[in-house]
Image (tube, rainbow, N blue to C red; front, side, top):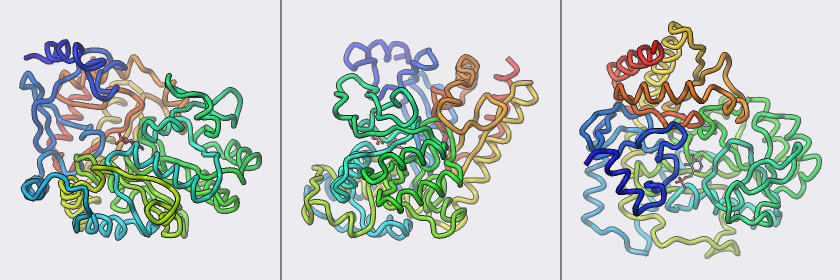
Length: 428
Ligand SMILES: *Cc1c(COP(=O)(O)O)cnc(C)c1O
């Protein structure tokens, strides 16, 4: 069947034809590609067309698709059983592996999705502090738990309004939404309600408003205000964890700000290597508030799944090899530099940035610092570029507010082919 035929068939039985909205290509228009299989850096759609994949399942596929050591680990685990609903040694091994790579974390609990991890971290932060208010930033995505589906209300530093039907305003009334990288708004919010804040949740290197780094002054102020007011600083590293560096974005900020650490961390995507797996972690004193030790309830039938943990462990082992991230970062940088240079020579102003294997580029003169600026960039131009690239066999994220991902399977030749496609698409 063609992609279009599959899309028609899908729409009859699945709302919008997809199981997660961005896959429907609504922002860019056109027919979503139905993927038949993947290998290394490539995807093949239902019509047999090949694409260089810069989504990598939105981050998890850091080794590329079908890495032999990972496939082997998953097959071996599958033969020993899919799920037991009882503890296994492999869960302990994965927990130990995560903690060894993330010095801020003393204990970790495994769950099945980033949404679940962020939602559980939030409940734990509230339970551990006995406070209600949570702070998030406009343009950061933390999954679709009710209390996090909010946008800023009118005026600076007001409590948020739901962004989804089905979320009563009562559920978001304790969620404060602030502009990203805005020191004044942050200070004002803490001045007003600092002692009521349970936690501040932040994407330290945001990947859900394209690619934007928290500035060092912003992160420094955030850390000191949280400490001063007894609020927990929660890093949502579902996307950035084990992706921008082996130690996640927190290792990047620890290099820039002496002694820097978040209080809690949320992981997903790469730690499952493409299988449903996520985690939240923090100091023992906070994590011990969780059931069965403490009063904060949290559970999961498939949590710590034996096949998913095998996949995650094999993935972490491969990315821990010396030089892995240096090579990945260099390849990613050369991609961004190449595409931006292609824009310049076509007379299209472009800028880009990357860290480790995560990147973003913008049709703009300077790198945006917050969500509003990203969304004000040229949507039509992005959509034309996206389709120009797709036609030429390059699969970019189908929305201008999404980051991109390079895997260890992407070769220099793949990057060169991508840059050549970009030059043609931009010339058009
Ligand atoms: C993907 C993502 C989530 C949600 O994870 P799911 O597994 O899709 O539920 C949460 N936070 C961030 C930063 C993400 O990128």
